[in-house]
Picture: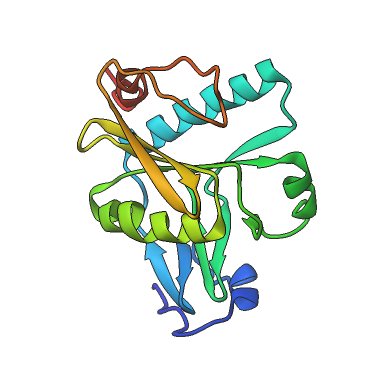
Length: 190
């Protein structure tokens, strides 16, 4: 039997919230929002990108780590779950024995769009990540076969959209050599 989660909680309560289920929630204005399990396509794309970014971090000997499904505090009683985020070793050390919810901005956040996350990824997370001053935010959209790379400039994101064989240009990973279709094809099983 699935219990109904509490109606309002603080950020501090969210960090230790456990309803006895394996559900994932985001905290939005003090309310728990249930996150639907991702599709296999979504998982495959996120896994491919995590491995790619891990390899690039290692190749460049950068003091960074890439995590799947970690949290990012985006407001007083707000926390989002990222598909991927790249953080410094120092940021990770601060949370070594705590809930993996970063309270300082990651270097890069990647969200993979699913049918139910379109508005959340393109609108809400975009404005929340900009307000948090996340320097780079990727929106990987297999539904529209594109990747949007948003770079923070004077508090707002400047967006560049890449499609098909276009090479993704990243400020965080300037030597990255990957085309949009390679990322999106990672979501296929055949």
